[in-house]
Image 1 (tube, rainbow, N blue to C red):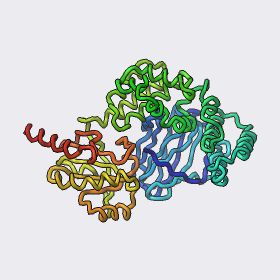
Image 2: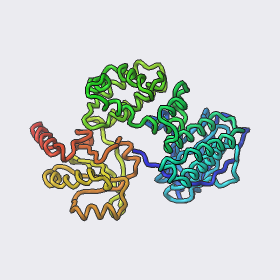
Image 3: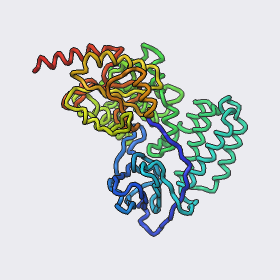
Image 4: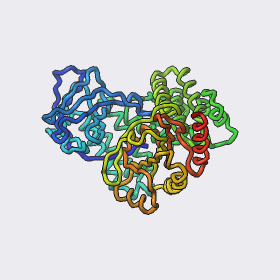
Length: 455
């Protein structure tokens, strides 16, 4: 559900070791964004990516802004400015100077002389070297003929960075290279598990460790779920208990035989299965609550708490999340503009056949209920021209908006299309709603009929 843009940026910083060693300080210039809001946050878990905001302020009228984060730790902080968000690797005891040159906040530059002792510099150089190797050897990596070159490259990285002793950087390097090995099929999954996970500390707060973990175990629990229609794991997920059955199944697998890691694999897998079509979401929530209750790992408790908070905010009866989008002419609209009637809010992707099929099938439902329901369809990957062409070609008459991908994250959209039926007061009725091909018209008809009887 998350889209990543990669920029090569100029990196620099002034290190002020006289300041509080636990404080991060940043001075910024954003001349085109004078007076506009900005915020700084940090994920307090890297499974649900629940963000805690540390700073909420405005850029000064002179286009300058600054902030301090006391009692901080090394890691990724997210700067939200203009219409964009930027992860920044920051360390306590340093002052950073940044420049945001454009009115959208698309780029963040560190324009001063480079400090090569900073993690921000060291990790960026490592990223550049790995990206260059991957691009230059793309065909050999794709064809699985990179073993000797890859081993030589990894050995050279170990030598190059042997002088560095910082544990954060060494972990970053190890799991960045693990990511490269997985992409190149250099080692089997079992070997990668034994090398990078088995018996190792679970580094819940390290972004690169968790990035590799999330890629490595993507779809893992779902695969176990699909292995047998009569498996105890499948029965536990179907009945919503006990979570010990899931943990035992994970521990028996060759990629999950580690007690502490098994709980992290479990909550990640449950978070994925929650959005699987046909799954009883309430049963998944029961398993998460059970895991939250019995785990001794505070980090797992935090992930479970965040997961339940996220899923809870989209339940029927909860208020919908407000957002803005742009129509095909570039005009900005808030979703609140369409209140006062029932609303069918649908997220779609014009590059997916299923999405196109369902959206075009929505025409009949629109014709049937347009007097009672406002139809709003949104897309994060569209351009003005492609969206307008799609609307005109299919003769679609309701509202279409282009939105920021962040909105999809807030609505937990993982499949296209995904719809939400909202009542006149702005609360969810069907969350998610059925699709046109799976009885949406009948569900709306019966609901509206019941509502008219009440009145």
